[in-house]
Length: 247
Ligand SMILES: [Fe+2]
Image 1 (tube, rainbow, N blue to C red):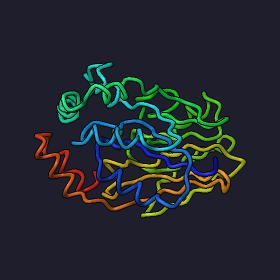
Image 2: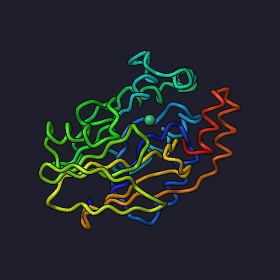
Image 3: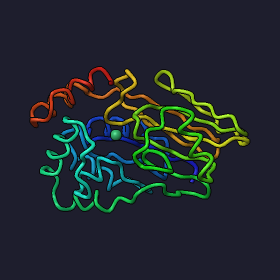
Image 4: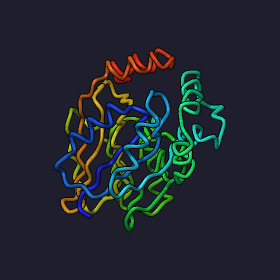
């Protein structure tokens, strides 16, 4: 394997997923890493699951929304909009869709020697990694060279070299990070379905293990169509509006 597509926080946004796959066409990737939150918030849980099932070389972990939508947990810590969306999602899913979510494994998961994927952090699938101090705990507790994570919807690269931990946000519509061999790395590809860094374009990553690079790509998708579907489904209005702003 030399090239992987890295997708996180798809959140039932079918149009965003299709735009990403279209953008990545021709990259000759042979593995797709999915970092969880396949569903929740958006109006197309079944459509997104169906597309994921057809992709080659998928290695996936679940996210907190998948866990609650699958009925494994009640989601008491969710805010009002998230809870209302997860209840809507449970009703919208068919048997195979629910089964797909129920059988998504909990991270961390090793997809190659020393390389992990997880939803929040390798220590806790629900932990938000937005600061170096949080990353440091994972670097210290878990042995890995490279770890892809999601959950925050915030694309970034964290490197650890000796005792120095440094977090860099992915800027602009294309950001390339070199995986320097002397360091260890954690990378968040951003969110396919609900970007929150004030760039409303869908976010994903391409991991090239021959070049030792990870590139974050941003792709426009028909946000207004997706927003309309969310409103028509009776989901909370804010879940549609926030997509326009990327927050
Ligand atoms: Fe998420």
